Length: 93
Image 1 (cartoon, helix red, strand yellow):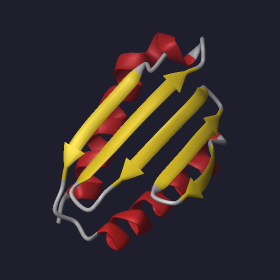
Image 2 (tube, rainbow, N blue to C red):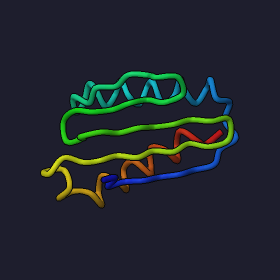
Image 3 (cartoon, rainbow, N blue to C red):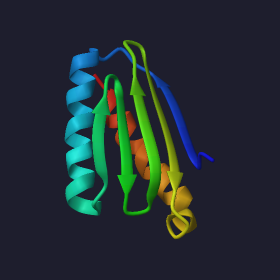
Image 4 (cartoon, rainbow, N blue to C red):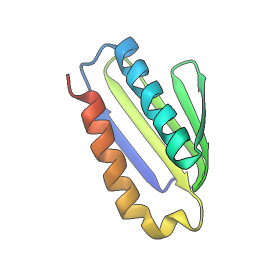
C-alpha cells in the first residue's frame, strides 16, 4: 500500500531531470542509507524507513510512490512535505 503519492507535470528535459534525480538519490543514500537503482525511466528505492519507492519520469511528468516502513509512518506528513519540496526544486527550470 502506497503511503505517499506525488504526481507532477514538468517541462524539464528528461535527461536533465534524470541527472537531478540521480544527484538526489546519491544524497539520500549518503544521508539516510536509501538504496536505489535505475530500471529504464524508473528509479527504484528501498532502505532505511522505505519499504519500496518508485520514481517514474516521462517527457512531461514525474510520478513518485513510496511505501514507508512502520516507524517512518509516524513521520509521514513531514516526509511527504520534504519530498514535495525537493521534487518542486528539481522541476524548476
